[in-house]
Image (tube, rainbow, N blue to C red; front, side, top):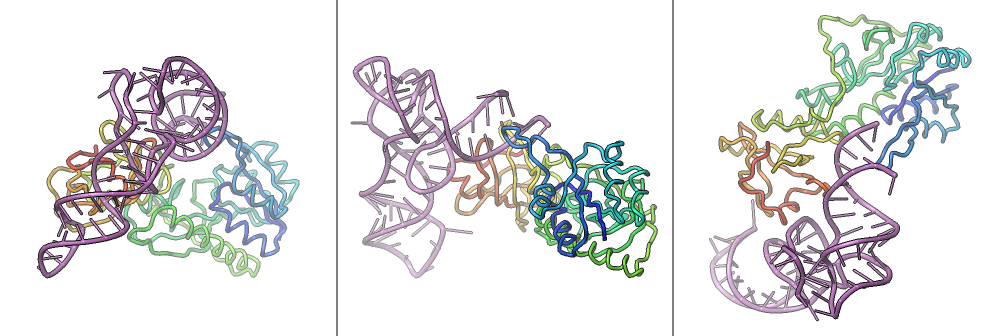
Length: 308
RNA sequence: CGCGGGGUAGAGCAGUUGGUAGCUCGUCGGGCUCAUAACCCGGAGGUCGUUGGUUCAAGUCCUUCCCCCGCAA
């Protein structure tokens, strides 16, 4: 089938790979190169790089809704359009180009977690289960009819990065099956129950500020959900300290949330999280590299200090 | 040249107004103990990122370059 893939970051790489191997006639539409890194070098989207390796033609648009974008799509004349973490809204004009319309791969169990960062929010909110949904793209934000859905359990210590990797692979699988059913005429549509819908926005750095009075589980969930980006943090002596990894303990609270109740290079770093102690396994101080807490403790006396 | 922080023993950090380097852990040897993430004694280990300079003397001041980290994008 002739398919236009609209995608940008590495979430879509397994999908790109799958479509390529399945032998579809592909063209990739993605975002323009953008400044990234310390030097602000112009960096191409991950999908563009990968497509280049496969020899798949790539077009880049600031707005696929623009006349230029629409014209480029029409020129390719796809039978199907696929979006996966594209990062742009589509117009009616875009959607009407392929006869099969557009299928979106979304990393949540719709109608829950419509929006930008479903994987991270699912973890931050302490969800035990999430998944991937393929849906018929409509104008609303992730509101179209559900085509296929697959669930996965979220591990108690799983990070957003780890779940991201699993769901991006799963996304490719689900899309593969969705396309096969489409070709066999075996695809069914299910309307979303808007009453059950929840929305999530983009993750901002401020969301990572840890409130140690929130309890062990909520802090742990936040740390997992913000890993690897942008990483949860707390203020110590007026400076932001990143908390990369934590571990639940059964030790009782000392009644002073944020306080380093135990800070020993051999035993580890234990912080009061309101309803008990949470062990900090990996930490990163300003200007320093990320390291395990016991190592960091060798040169920094944290006992008695308080994270705010 | 976007802004800022940093490169000191295997690891993490200190090193004040410039005067040939300390701490914690690890490591090696010995001791104590029923035992230990415990304790005691002793030892090894550093051309202080790199280049050039100032000085009687530089980890500590100035300079070149390299690398790491954060912010901003």
